[in-house]
Image (cartoon, rainbow, N blue to C red):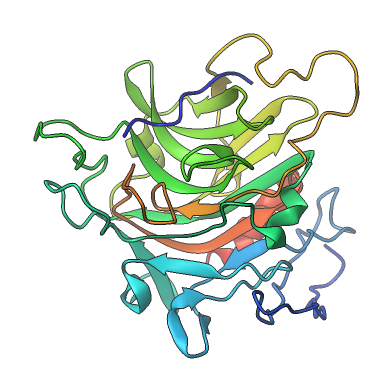
Length: 321
């Protein structure tokens, strides 16, 4: 399966305790504590509470194959195929982390360990990304195995996937692969790159912002790294961060594939609920394999706003453990 084809385009510490309306599909959640960055321009403001947040320390009661959302949306995550075994102890991170991996490199099937949620009519708890003007995804990632993985969908033993799946929000018409906004590694001009990839309009063109540095320097094997990607659908801009600091990069395709030039203003994503979240590979509904990541992941955060550089640094410091 090839990667999604690109087009263009703190005041003292507070503990936020928010009472959420809980539906049968959205269990009660806990607050995410936000830490200010003293001495910055944003020191007097708070980083917004994430739409969704997963630390892999909060299994659903009675169903450990699902993970509770600690953000404000209550979007429960499915630990696909690995179930409770996907939560593992790590020698550098506190508590448990998520393990994703390819299981059968030479066999076409649906047994890769990944995580996510999928709704063919959209996922209502992710409505914050319905018509959103901005988004940010961030988390901690550790490459632990063979990446990119062998392509289990072809008979050629030397064929490898053209991408390594990290985390993203699906588009409102996604088949489980197409995204509204994504943090991933994909092949750009013959080289694997760490990228932010966004699609403003469902079914429309995407834009990719690719980091300049070699991906193995950004994500050395066995090393925990904080990555973040921001998306502004109104201005047509994206950014990448490593360990709280901006990563130099470039837009892959010139022009205006997000169609943000000219009226009407402002520009926003399609007015549809995303069909879900994908983590560690495509197709969270488990109908197909694609772009698996032999990785460990922790503290995955999904915001409906493009965080500022100071806010990205704040979140990095808060979650580095």
